[in-house]
Length: 505
Image 1 (cartoon, rainbow, N blue to C red):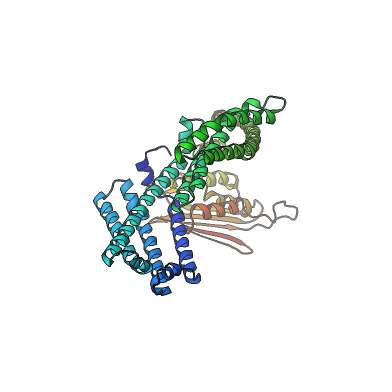
Image 2: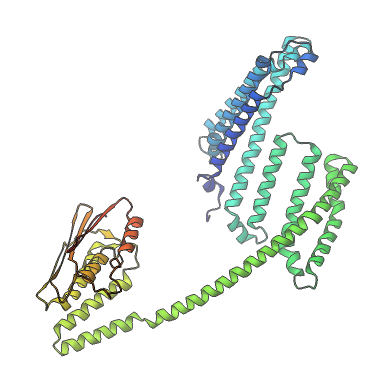
C-alpha cells in the first residue's frame, strides 16, 4: 500500500471481517451446543444456600440469553459501530449505540442474575440490597466487556494495519521485517485471549515476558549474530555461545522487571530462569534453521536472476539483429527499384508488405486497436495474396469489408487467421477455387464470414491432417477476451469450408 494512513486503510474492506463472522458464529454455536448437552450448572450454590433449584429457570435459559445477547452485541459493535468510529463517521449515532448496548447488557444481565444468582438473597439483609449488588455487578460486567472489546478492536486494526503495510515499514526500518510484524500481532492476539479468558496471573506474566523475548532474540540473531559467525570454523557453536552470554546478562534485569510487577522474588526468579532456558533450547536452534533456509532460498533466487539476465541479454541480442529500420529501408529500396524497372505489381506488393510489417511491429502488441486498422490489414493481406493468383482465371477472390467510420475497437489479429486459413487450404493454382470474405457492423456487433473451397491434399503433405493456421489459438483468445460475447460457427463439407463469427465489440 502506498497510502499508509489508518483512515484510508480502514475505509477499504478486508478479509478479516469474514473470518471474524465465522469465528464468532462458530463460538456461539459451540457454546449453545455444550449448554444443551452438558448438565453442569451452579446447583451447588443453591444447595449451600438451601434454596430450591430449577435447572432451566435458574441456569439454562439465563445462560442461553446471555450467549445470544453477547453474540448480537459483538456483531453490532464490530461490524457497524467500530468501523464508523475509526473513520470518524456518524459519531453521535455510534456513541448512542455504544451507550444503548451498555445499558441493555447491564439491565438484561442483571435481570438474568436474579434467577441464576437467586441464592444471594439469603446472604444480604434485604431484597433491595441484593438487587443493588446484582445490578451493580451486571453493569460492572457490561463495562468490562466494552473495555475488552475496545482492546480487541485496537489490537485487530493495529495488527492488520501493520501486516498490510509491512513492506512500507520495512523500507523505512530494515530490522522490522514482515515476520517480526506477524509475530508481534500474534503475540498481541494471544495476550488478549488470555486476558479475556481470565488466565492465571503467573501464566499471563510468563507469556508476556517469554514471547517478546523470543521475538527479540530471533530477529537480533537473524539480522546480526548469525551473519557475523558464518565465516568462522564452528559457526553454530560461536552463535550459541554469544546468545548464551546475552541471556545470562539479561537474567537479572528480567527478574527485576517481574519483581516490580508482582512483588514476588521467588516467582520472578523462576520466570527469568525459564525464559533463559526457553530461548536457549527453543528460539536459538529455530533461528539457526530458519536462517539457513532463508540463505538457501536467496541463493536459488540469485541463480534464477542470473539465468534470467542471461536470457534477457540473449533476447536483446537477437532482437537487435532484426532491426525494423533496416527492413523498412530495404523494402523502400526494392520498391524504388521495381518502379524504375516498370514492375508495378512488384512495387505494389512490396508497399503492401511494408504496411503489414508496420502493423505487426507497432500495433499487434496492443491490447485493443481500432477495428478500421484491422480491416486495413486484411485488405492489404488479401490484395497481396491476390497478386499471385490474379493471372489464374480459375481462382475467384471476393472481399466485401465494410468501412468502419466510428471508433470501434477489437483485439488485434483476431480476424486475419481465418483469412490466412482460407488462402492456405482453399487456393490451388491447378484447380478451380474461390474465397469470399464479408464483414459488416451493426450497432456494436460485428458479423464476419469466410467461405472458401477445399482442395484435396496430397498424401505426402505434412499438414494434411492439421487444422487451419492459428484457429485453435483464435478460439482460445476469443474465450479469454470475449467470454459470452461471441459466437463462432465453423462448418466443413467435402467442397466448402465456412466460418461465421458474431462478436460483441
